[in-house]
Amino acid sequence: MGYRLTAMPWLPPAPGDFRPRLKAARAEPEGFLRAAQGLARHALDLNAQHSLSRAVDDWLASTAGQAAVSLRVAILGNGTTDLLRSALQATLLRHGLVGSVWVPPFGQVAQQVLDPASDLNRSDSHFVLLALDHRGLPLQPCPGEAAQAVAVVEAALAQVRDLAQGVARQGATPIVQTLPAVPDTLFGHLDRSVPGTQAALIDAFNQALRRDFASWGCLLLDVAALAERVGLDDWHDPVQWAHGKFPLAMEAVPLYADHIARLIAAARGKARKCLVLDLDNTVWGGVIGDDGLGGILLGQGSAVGEAHLAVQRAALQLRERGIVLAVSSKNDDAVARGPFREHPEMLLKEEHIAVFQANWLDKASNLRAIAQTLNIGVDALVLLDDNPAERAQVRQELPEVGVPELPEDPAYFTRNLLAAGYFESTGFTAEDRERAEQYRSNAMRAALEGSTSNVAEYLDSLAMVATFSRFDAVGRARITQLINKTNQFNLTTRRYTEAQVQAVEDDAAGLGLQIRLADRFGDNGMISVIVCRAEGDDWFIDTWLMSCRVLNRKVEQATLNELCAQARQRGLRRLVGEYIASGRNGMVAEHYARLGFTPLERGEASSRWVLELAGHAPAPVPMQIEWR
Image (cartoon, rainbow, N blue to C red):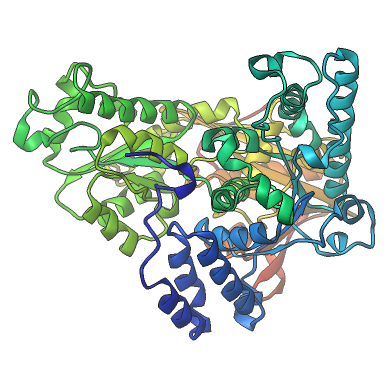
């Protein structure tokens, strides 16, 4: 079979009754969102996305829709972006986001960014995509003029930087994109080697942008890489550019929108954390219970065996970048573990698997159990399963789980999994490398807790060490990552860029606190972030978040003890905390009440709490406290 990326083959095909289902969704405003999300999880073409987007627009104008909006995105480009607007608004639903998408009139990029009274600067957008290609930047070719070529690239880069920083000053997160290469060449195979050609200028610009974007406080959308995967002749459509200034081929718009949406979702903490692997005919070829250890297909010398080996290799590479691995297989446990222990071609070993579920329960039940064991939501899971019936059952019962379609030929399994973008990342830190092992250690802790009847004895047995330190340059990237991806144990769900985190570091009157936790099973890494801002004699707790991996270990009490001690040293009188409901952080609605704070004001969606430092006595905690 051919592989067409623009068809998004990891998604199930659009339902034949798409239009009747959309019409029915329109007629039920209260159930519209769930129905629309169900439709958005399919591979919709541009016409279907436009229809869905129009329905979303109508629903957003309703009371229920206005209350559900959690995201506002603006698109600024040098081409016509109306079709992209419709595609993106429909696609955001697939990534768990309810967003409104706005585009200005054609050709108003600089005006919208730089004019304080512009529609953009009054829109209160959360993200602004600068959808510029080589035709929207001063990248005039100058073949053979090396010094001039450097100046041309620097001028184009400065223009994008100024636009991005203008967006950031308005409080939005700018998204900058690399430039797709052009398919036409002047020098043939020498084109990218001659300084100043269009191809060489684009290459140099992209290299510089990839180097500098993070220091501007931006997210990077690597459109150049995406266009190369699609194919430059298929990405660019000169007819559509000539007739309507459409910057890319119509067929590629849904894929482009998907990449924008997955990047925004990752920035909002919605990237998946765990890959759950089926075994028979997924990790190896054949059925271990029937074919036996010598009968399954795995390893060199067999096309099928090598394809399944590629799946294992991809899983291990994902684990190395921090994705947790689990197993869900309809099998006897001992039989399922056999190849992990005895097959010489197996790359995956039992120690790579954080949770191993081999039983005869349905997949949805096992996925719930895996999520519970790892203390993550089911929406953090991706299931890789060759069986279409199993995929359908999970999609029906747990639509939040990522379930890529798989073709019959296992040679495409890895490509479908990785192309789907479930594990999109906006950054990569040293702690990301350790996350998979941290979750596996957490599963071991859970097993120990289950075997211990006395909670206090269990906590003491962990031999925990909590390390507190102020925000610093070393931890800045990880702090920013936690602030932008933590949803459940997050009192306010405020999101900050790396530049804003640095501003907290420099605020002598406030406090930015990072907390790490280690125990006898290993280092959990950075598990909590606190931001306090001075308000007279008070510290206002702007941000308090914690990884759910360390729930019920008294870390909250230890943190409060240290906050009070720091505040007293500065002569402060009170701590003031705030809770803002986000729809996903209900577990901490009574956080401050549990810690002994008194309510100042309470509403359905938010509350404020106060703790008088003079009357607070430190709570005993089962851990050693260190300051770095």
